[in-house]
Each structure stands twice: as C-alpha cells, then as structure tokens.
Picture 1: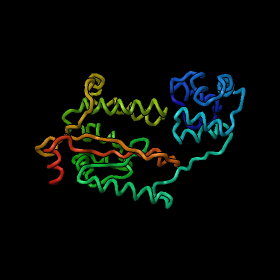
Picture 2: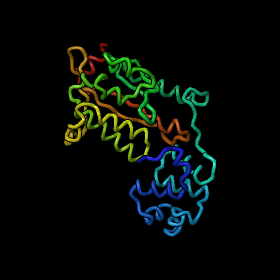
Picture 3: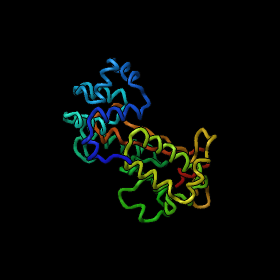
Picture 4: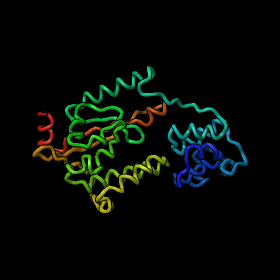
Length: 263
C-alpha cells in the first residue's frame, strides 16, 4: 500500500532516504561512494542512529535524484524547513515562466502543444489542442483536463486513434516509469485507472519492437500521423516549475503537415 502524505511526514528521515535508495536500486556502498561518506554513516542515517544535517539530507537527495517536492518532505521529516518554493503558475513571480511557455506554445502552431503538471493535468495549450478535443465527452473536458485520460478514455480520443494498442502501451510504459521514479500515489491511481479501460489487456503485447510510436489519429476522412516530444525546464528551483512538462506534437509525414497547416 502506498503511504499517504501524512504518513510520510510521520516517518523518520532515515527511513524515507532508505526507501529512495532502494527505489534507485543502489546499495549503501554505492550511495556512500557517490556522496563521499562512509558506508557506516549512510547505515547510521537510515537506521536513525545518526541524525543527518540539513546539508547531508540535501546531498543524499541530490545523488538519489529525488524530486524537489519530495526533497521538501525529506527536510521536514529531518526537522528542517523546506527550501524549495511551490508557486502558483499564475502568481507574479511566475510571469517569466508563463511568458516563456506562451511563446513556445504559440510558436509551435499550427501543430498541437500543451503543458502538463506532474499528474498530467493540462495547465496551458495552444490552438492546436482543438484537434484532440473534437468529439470528446464534455465530462472529460471539465478542468482539470488530464492529458492521458483524454487520450485513452473510451469517451475521449481513443475511438479516433487507429493504433490505440500501441499508443496505450507507450503511454502506460512511460507512466509506469514515472510512478517508479516518484512513488506518487496519485500517479499510481491514474495508472490503475488507465489500465482498467476496455482493451488494456492487450497493452503489454503491443509496440514491443517499435523505436518511436506515432499516433495515428483520424480527423474527418483523413488519418494523421503525429510524433510527440517532452521538454522540461532546466535547473528549476521551484517545485511547480520542476514538474511542468511541455508536450509538443509534430507531423510524422508530409501529408499530415500539409493538412494541419491548412486547418
């Protein structure tokens, strides 16, 4: 069973650090060598025999590639104040980030592009998103719109995706890696929900030999072929910024490019 946030705060910092180390499949010796401390010190920290300093918590978290949100939780569990801000995307301090996102999205038109948060909820999108929302159930378009749910739900884009099994396999595989990396219970719930959709029993068998899986999307009497890329902000110091992902779609063939430019 996945721990709740309240349970996480009640757990000792050493226990949380051990969980992250095991999740990264590192031994105490591996981690000790990376952080340049003794294996004994790592053991003492994990068992609670030694209280790590604030700097040691951050060093261990950095080498374990712990997300900023969870680094704050580690600091709290260790008795220290969080150091990473978590600003609303609409706050004045995020103006430069919002403007950068808006320029990226507009520059990508007429091709679809969107910005999602850690849980794949859409926070920004360009005009090309209309290609995906066409014919979708109004229930799926109520904020916050979840990009993965929009894609794979039977009342969403799924009926228009010609290679749905391959797209589902790729999406679930990526989400599973994200769950393993973050141990986020909300992402686990989303993964379980998506796996429960009709037809998901074929997912593990699909796209095993693919290098890149294009999405074959029907639009009117045409079948469009789209590739997708994910971009993130470099060196973020804010939790919100660190969790933003920019998903951009590109035409996989000339016919798709011409059709999208003509819309």
